[in-house]
Length: 291
Ligand code: F3S
Image 1: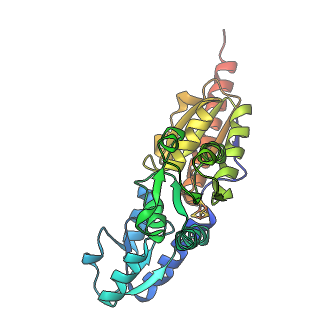
Image 2: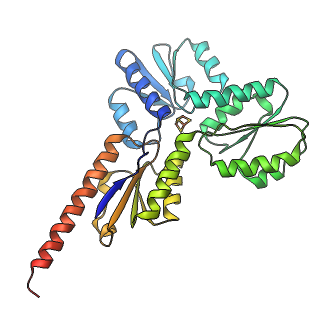
Image 3: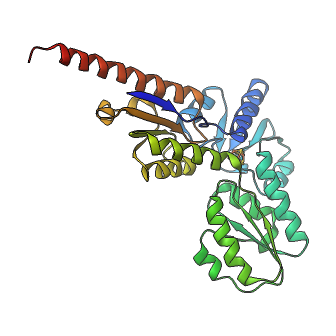
């Protein structure tokens, strides 16, 4: 069995940058992050070992600490809250998310009704909504878009990890709800690129392994894209791999969600390759057995 790694997999630029900023901060200050920096338990554990603490609320932060804003970004009220308690802010908001926040704020100031396409419970969407003021509306589906009234001026943007084809469908529907629609395509290429590469790989392999947090939306999305094309397993660490998955496979593919660090991908790759060698050894042993 051959193991092929997806050409683009694992940490995106924004997550890598946020982790580096957090680690640098922890060398000189008592760093805390508002929510886990990343949806990956193994990484969160490593960060905790480096002294980076996770808090759920600004009320838990003191002015002796450095507050890391994660790549998802936050609403302006959080910066204001941090300033009120005099805490140092290390802003690791991904620049692509910052762009979406700026566009949301600008559109709201210009009097457009802002629509944000994405998961309304996701912190990135909640942050962007905060930048657009109190009138912004989150929607996820075309059905929700259909429910919207007619607006004189509309601006739509997307959570960075949304699928381009779903965004296009929403835009098409919104055109029926205004005569003045401004479309800000804020979808980040990193996600689309990883999904495209994973889908192409899944087409040609016998089995796919997707590595990443089970609570990571982009990892689950990658797994579902692959599962439409071939037998697919989602795992968090190399320990979960099972030899039986690869028994009939000639080629196995490997990809990983945007919150999966290189060291975990490497461990999985190594274990898949070792399993393969064991399988080959067993096959040659069986070959050598008298009938
Ligand atoms: Fe940024 Fe795109 Fe990653 S928006 S956090 S580089 S998925």
